[in-house]
Image (cartoon, rainbow, N blue to C red; front, side, top):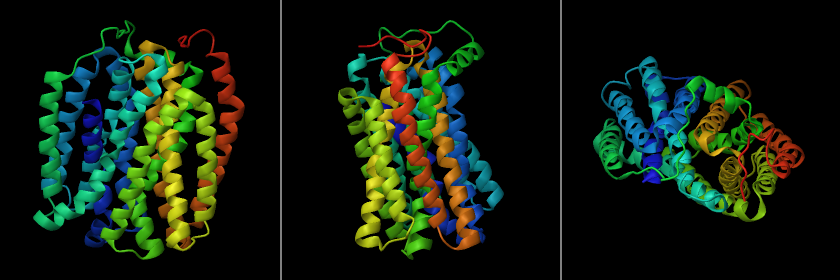
Length: 391
């Protein structure tokens, strides 16, 4: 149920991305405006995870999953009925559409509480497959518009969110041993900020999940402008990228349970470095470009799963939601910046090479950080006794 809720809310969260090329043409948007349109829900959904994660620690997933799902219905219906008349209306709708992106911060602490430490990497990785909601959006949105008009994908998504909110309220239950923090929201967030794992995992998730989000929202535009693909073909290829990343997320968690999260993270970041370096030279799409992009998809998915295996291992049980909120926000912000950078670079130079070279450098630096600093934290078991002891 948690994975289904995550997928549905992410489906709603990603509704604007597949339609961005069409909206660019109908509203005469610049490359930067198009990038801003798809980036705004990412930013809001990311920053919103901080309070939502802390509220989940307090009230639990049984309350927060239906609440977030029901709240997401409002901007979805607004966009379907009135939001596509102007860029301003789209940005307003996209701002509140970001609520759907906060569902991630609900699911991680909810799922984490049900499993022993040695199984949390895989369990949270399976939950993380809900990010495949972006693939559902990529595969269905344009087809639904062609079949029934611009409002159709929004109406379908709103109806499914409503059904899920009712069912989740009826069937979800909290883990029997879930601990409820007694401190105020402000004190909990301050204590979370003092944990080393919060900032280390945030930095890594900004690259791993941020890279995945950036590709999932900007890849259709990149393939259309960089390789001249048709909209439907570009959307389908983006869906393939997303599906592979989603499938690799539980693999990253499973490998982390067995080999260690830091080792898995370092390996995936090396793969991203290599893939981005190759793609910076804009190789032919078949086969080199496809291999480079799919290698990055697999690595970013596995790296995202490994990051939260690290959180599950090192974060105190009653702060998993708060830590997840901060780390999830970092991942979303990591996904917000690259589309804007790529749009600005392409608008000024007519090439994406510099943006991909920057990704390669960031991934390489993150791999070194993982090997040097994060591995030391894992060996030490935490900071100042504030990290929960685990097997």
